[in-house]
Length: 408
Image (tube, rainbow, N blue to C red; front, top):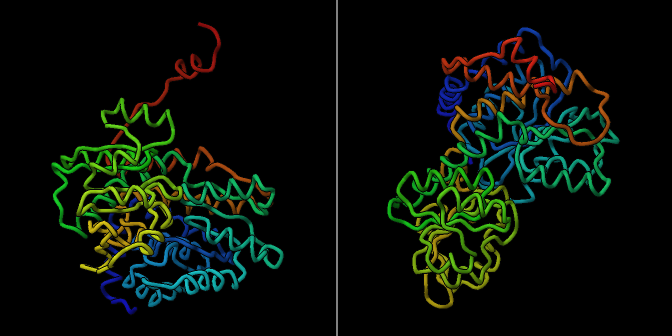
């Protein structure tokens, strides 16, 4: 697909106005050029916010090769705008899986020193193809919960060959991006796609991690009656005490109007649950991969499939009931909306930029998983507060001494 360059530039500029922390980082990078001769392979959703991160890295001296983190999440206008600015991009909305992984291989073919990833496809691919043996790879950064799970499994298997910083685990990222960003943007995507009124609906949220909490609270804020499904006793208990109804998916399937998966796991909504849903139920996913709803079985068993709107499929079940699958079970907030608001990606991508700088300064790290340095996490949060005009107290010397002492 071909995007509109002028519109893409306007989108990027609009996001920049709402990303003041990253803009401050960008100004310093342009002056200090910390990434001279550093090549980045960046696998992120190609959005107006990502464009500002890419331009921040480039202004710091980097050579960037950008590919998407999902075959359907690219904003073609933004992709074309970045190309017009000289950024190397291989991304378009509607890529086949071969094209998607081919793009990642293309980025890896340019001898990257740093991998920035969302979902770990790039990092896993680099290990499968063993690009580390051919290139000097300083390390990688992972943006999302799904990727963290995969990389921890890679480490546990003794296969992790590079240092990986879990940007997803930074407090200034996960407490805001995962909860508020996904919460708002997923509801936004569902409303844009269906035009439904959330007030009065029974909304079933599968998973009550930070993402699920955000979705559940945004749905409740719009007047929905929210049901949570969980496998964790702790999270289920938390959902109950937060005022939500908790029940198994098999029971929730019978009463829900809208279903939203946020688990990071396969078949959070199995096909058997879909068969007992009421006529007209809506299915959406905000997890990284299209596995949380059993889409494969749903497609295979359907009597008919009709796309009634772009990325809204009416699926007639063998029992004659209809369900409406959004975005083919992929990330609804990126396929049917614009992803997270720039205000929250400001913190996520400031962490990405600053951790990348940290990685360049510490090139000799051993393979393993690393947290975002606390000083970076706190710097991002404190800078965000200042850009919002918010001031906070500081500990006095007496308070610091009290907190560091075992004496009463």
